[in-house]
Image (cartoon, rainbow, N blue to C red; front, side, top):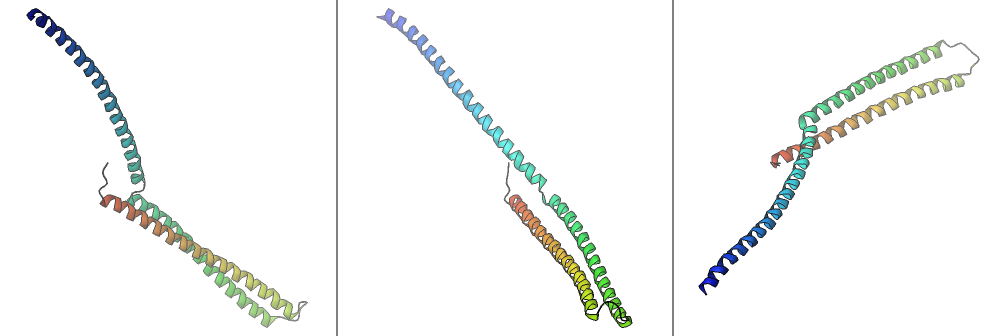
Length: 170
């Protein structure tokens, strides 16, 4: 019996060594696949964070402020130009009204009746007033656009500051 035990124990030991080696191979393959999957997920997270970071860099408050200042300056220059034109047109209308009064005072009997002259003059004055009115409306539209842009940039700045205050980490 001792001989049998001495023979069986080494055989069982060899079988256990082979089984443990096979289990080790199986689990090492599983571990390698799991590790590769973790690396892939982390790479995707890094790409996501990089795109988020690029967006934050593109729309940081400093750049938004510069963009807003540039737009505001352009709009203010346009408003200033339109105001100047408006004043020039108003002066022109006043000059024309004065010229009309002077001509009415100096008018000699002509081929046109007084009523026809008044209609022509009224029509010309109406045209200039409509032109001035459309210029004022355009100025008002530009001012509203400027206010809308200002509120947009203020909201973006608040969002950016809120994100930074929440200590978003990558």
